[in-house]
Length: 189
Image (cartoon, rainbow, N blue to C red):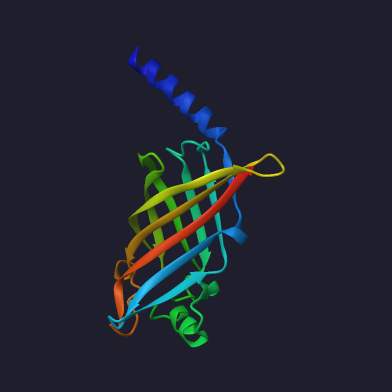
C-alpha cells in the first residue's frame, strides 16, 4: 500500500512539474549588481550587462518550490572603469578566457515570511561550484495591457569570492561580495 501511495504521489508531482508556469525575465528591467569593499574605505559597484534567467513554477501569490536558473556573461562585466573591467576578466579574477559564464541553479525556494523567500542554490564561478544562500523579496505584481501578470523580485546575499578561487592579485578587495539582483518577469505562454 505504501509503495502504491508513493508511486501515485510521484506521478502527481511529475505531472505538476511538467506543467509548471514559466516566467520570462525582462532584461531591460532587470539587473545583476555586485558591491565590493575596496581598501577598507570605499566600495566598487559593478554589474553584468549580459545575462539570461529562467523561473519555473510559482504563482503570483506564492513562489514556494519555484526553480530559478541564471547565466551571466563574464565579458559583460561593467564597473564604469575600462581598465578595472579588463583586470576583472583576467586570470587573477574571473578568468574569462577559460570561464565565459557565471551560472546558478536554485535547489530550494521556500517562503520564510509573507513576501520573503530563502533561496538555496549552486553558484558556479571559474568552474567552482558552491552552495549559496540568498534572500528573495517579492516586491509586487501587476497586470500588463496584454493582461499578463508581471512580478518583481529583489534577490540579495553575500558570496565569498575566495571560495570560488576569485582571489585577485591584491588584498585590497574584501573577501565577501554583496550581490543584488532586481528581477522583473512576466508569464510566458
